[in-house]
Length: 409
Length: 223
Image (tube, each protein chain N blue to C red):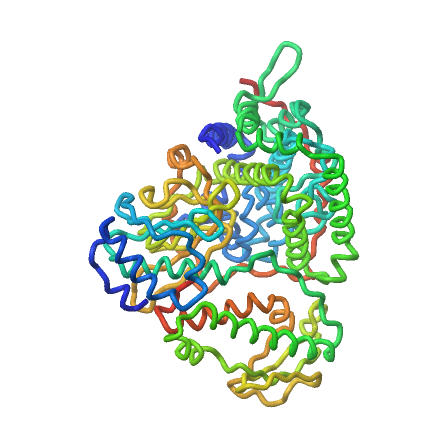
C-alpha cells in the first residue's frame, strides 16, 4: 500500500465534506458531544451511545439510525421540519457512499463477472436484511472503465463538484484521482496477476463455491439457523462469507483480490470519517503496549492505551495514537475499556488492521478524540430486537431523490 | 505479571539476552516455546523498545513497550502475546443451529460443557507453566454444572425462547428440561441458552482461561 491512496482519500473526502449536503448531514454528528448539545445533536448523542455499531459507516449512520433508533431519546425531533430536511440529507449521504463504493468496487479486477463471495446474493454487501456494510446492489455492479456515470451521480447527489465539459460532465479530479490511486496500488496489480493465472478449473471451482454459499445465504436458510433476530442473521452472514474467503478454492487463488477489497472498504471508511467528522480520530494518552502480526501482505495491531476518555471511539473508525509507538492509523475492529480501581486512567484496548503508509497523510487532518463522556461507562450498544427488524432494500438508492444540479469546478 | 509492573529499569538493546532468558523461564515447559523460530531481538523505537521474533510459521511478530518499563515487563508482554495467539480461534466461528426444544437444548448443553472442559484442560496443560497450573486451576470456576433448560416466552414475541438456570458444581455436568426452578440461590445463573451454545467450546475455554489469568494477575492480563 502506498501513501498516494491516503492522499487521494483525503482529497476526495475533504471535497465532499465541503459540499452542501454533507455539511447539513454532518452537523448533528459533529456536535453530538459538544458540552451543550441541542436538537438533533442531542438525538445523535444518544444514538452513538446506544447504537454505537451503527457508526461503523458514518455516511450510512443517519439513514440506519432514523429507521432503527427513533425510540431513542429526542427521536421525535426527526419529525420536525428540521428533522425531515436532515433525513433527506441522510438519505443522500447513504446514496452517495453506496454509489461511490459501487464505482470503486466495479474497478476491481474481474468485475462484474467474477463470482467472489462478496457479491453472492445474501452476503453482508448484497443482503436486503439488516447489514452494517456499505451495500453493493446488483444494478450498481459494472466493469472497469465504465464507472464515470456512477461517480458523477454520487457527487451530484451531495451537490459536490463535478467537472463540467462542453459536451457533458466528468467526475471531479479528486474522485477520478481516488479511482486512479486505487488502480495504481501494487496490491491491485497483484490481484490482476492472480486473476490472470486462474485456470478454467479454478474458475469452475470459484463458481461452485459461489453456488454453495448462495444456498446457505438464502432467507430461509438463514432463518433456519439464526432465527429472526437481525443482529444474529447478520452475524451468520458475516461468518459464512468469512469461511468462504478462507476456502481453498478462493483463499489460495485470489488472496490479493480479497486484500484489495478490504483495502478499498477501509479507504471508504476513512473517507466517510473525513466527510462526517473531519478526519481520523487522534487519541491522546500513553501507549502501554502494542503488538503487531503479519496478516497477508498487511499488518494487524493490538494497542493498549491509557486514556482519560475512551468514549470517543467506535468500531470501524480509523484511529491514530502516539506516532512514536504506532505511526500509521488503525481501523478499530474491536475495542474494550475498563477503569482500574486505583484511580488510574482508563485502560483501552483496540485491535484491527493497520493502514500502511497512512500516518503522515491522516495526521494532517486528524480530529482530537478528547470528547466529554456522554454517558455511563457501563453503557453498551444494544442489540436489535426482532420487533425492530427493518428491511434494508439496497436497490432503492436512486428513486425518490430529487436530482440536484451539480456544482462545477 | 505483578512483579513486572514494578520493573522500572530502562530497557535497551543490551537487555536482549535478559529478555530472552526471562521469557524462556516463562514458556519452556509449554508449547509456546515452539511458537518462536528465532531468539528475541530488542531495538529502540522512539521512547519504546520493540521486541521482535519470527514465528514458527515464518512471519514476523513484534511487541512494543515503553522503554522505561524494564526487561521483565518486556518479557511478560511477549509472553502475553504468545498466549493470546494460542487462545485466538484459528478459523471464524460456526453459527450453531438453534435448539428447538428444551430437551434438545439440555442435551446440547451437556455436550457443549463437556467439550469446553476438555478444551480447557488441554489449554492448561499446553500453555501454562507447570509451576502455575494449580494456581490457575484454583482460579477457574468449578468444572461441573447442574442446569435446567426451560421455555420462557417473555419478552413477548422474542425469537429466542430457551433459557437456562444453572449452578456450578464440583465435577458432574448435567442438564434436564423442566420448569424454571422456583428457588433462586445466589449461586444460580439464569441466561439465554443461546448465549452459552452460541460460543464455540474452544472459544469458551479460551475465555475462561483468560478470565482466570486476569483474576490471578492485574485484572486484565493477558487480554
